[in-house]
Amino acid sequence: MHIYKTHVKKQTECDMTKQQKDPEMIDELDKHLKYMEKQIRQLQETSSKTLKKAKEHIHSRTEENKSLIENLS
Image 1 (cartoon, rainbow, N blue to C red):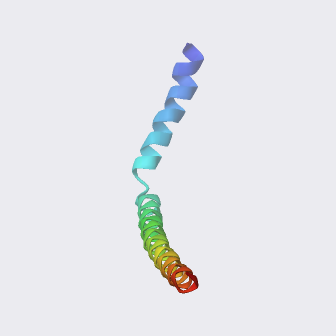
Image 2: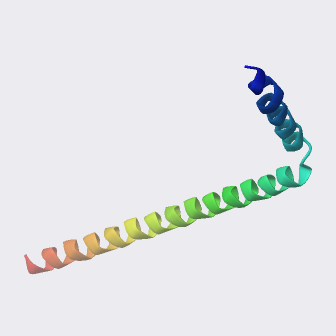
């Protein structure tokens, strides 16, 4: 316990104060977070557009096939 109190606890307290005093790290993490949020938003928009186009394509092909079947009858 003595070794813990003399060495480990001091090192942990020192690390905690260093982390709290590093605004550059916080700024960098904030920039990274904003970048990732932007990427997620763009992926969601792209996937929704792709899904909409796919549904429209399926619908048009279905209508085309329906009209071809009606013409054959």
